[in-house]
Amino acid sequence: MATKADFNAEEWSRLVEAPLLAGMRVSEASGGGKIREAMAIAKVYAHARQDQAASGLLDEIVGSPPGVSATSAGDDLAAVVTTRLREALRIVDEKSPEDSDAYRSFVVAVARAAAEAHEEGGFIGIGGRKISDEETAALNEIQAEVDAAT
Image (cartoon, rainbow, N blue to C red):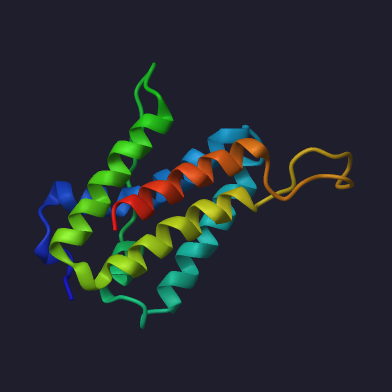
């Protein structure tokens, strides 16, 4: 099982930021509920922190505050997230294959938490959907990347 010491600074940065970027990608997909989505993501991090049996590496990752600069003006968030997620998955596969499944599950859990944070549409909480079509598309893209890297 790998630890933070097994990665250089750039690799570690990619591992730490990829789950949060996945959540940001879903959050940006529909444009609403940013505070709820951020709180939902924080809960996933807290839960992963409590569930230390899943992966020691994952515990170190969720304990490291992510500093994310996802895009600069004009960058496509979806493309940036895809690229960085691929890099992170490659890194974890190469350096800590025993933690790969836990890491992948965490990335998807963060993205799903952002999607499920609030209902989309409806009126005063009636008739909305848990996940918008845009969020579903973003989740599908993230899941496809996670699945393709295995």
